[in-house]
Image 1 (tube, one colour):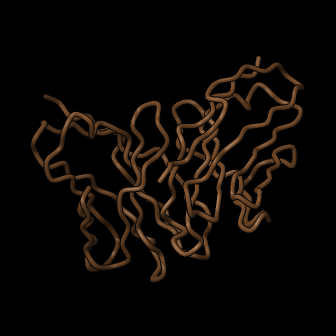
Image 2 (spheres, rainbow over the protein chains, first blue to last red; image 1 turned 90 degrees about the horizontal axis):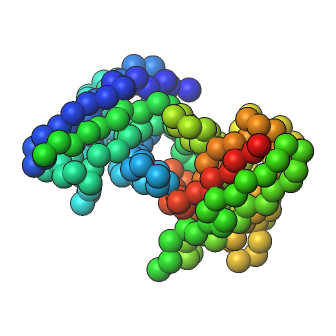
Length: 111
Length: 113
């Protein structure tokens, strides 16, 4: 299984883009990159996932490097409600039926 | 469309007791997973159910067991509670066809004294 490395914490100014990095240098060809977040006292929330192409949805954009060894989750206009722990997870689906949450990055959006 | 709901939200038990936690899946989802989240840590996978059968299990002892019902609701049972079982227990539902996109409930916080 590919391991992921994320910074333990980051700050971002409200209204600015939040760029959350994730290293997964041992990723294999059939492993997807998933991002979840967990706002305090709530269950985790699925954000986005991708294999090798960049992806965008209403919540965020996912940029995966060409060699797939790292990725960045981008929240284009961070708000105070985006303050949460963000988890980057690499899994083979559908083979792997569990999401392996590490420590994640605690993002604090400041006014 | 209703989301994932869990009950109870909070409960306190003593060592050696048994507990049952309940989960109603999001409408249309056919797979349910359970996670344990200790304070300050990420969620840890307990097991998953699909078509009422266990479909994968994490590193948890047999005293953690589960059920999935025909309406896709689910239960997590923990026997012989230990102090270390104190945690937030999260239920997540998903479509079999989109296994990585989990929809989590708010969790049940269990305290074992």
